[in-house]
Image 1 (cartoon, helix red, strand yellow):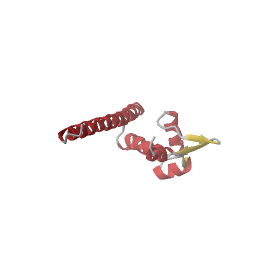
Image 2 (cartoon, rainbow, N blue to C red):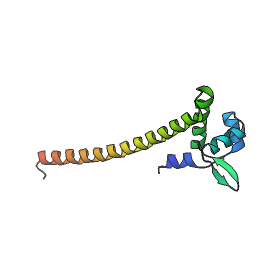
Image 3 (cartoon, rainbow, N blue to C red):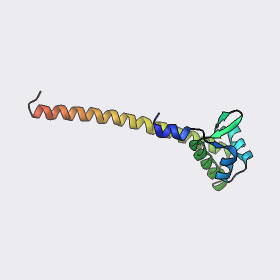
Image 4 (cartoon, rainbow, N blue to C red):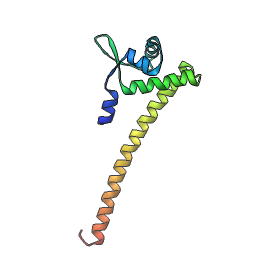
Length: 117
């Protein structure tokens, strides 16, 4: 896991802080947790939200309040979003492998042209 991802997943914010940040009642955040939209870390019975949790909650609020998406729709959108992110990482890994293979092949051909092989 990259450092940026680790930082985004680090639990930082209490529910009261997140509710102020997102301008929603703490009970709304608890409801979204019950719905499975977010799973905050728990330390001594306190919910601690990461930056990634806050980002996801912001999306959920935008979908439900601003766009009128129901809970089932939010669930589908979040799952699709997660899958797209996974696919993006997989594609990046494949592209890195292809880049390395192409680079090695070009270096081999260049050495062959120079008569170094």
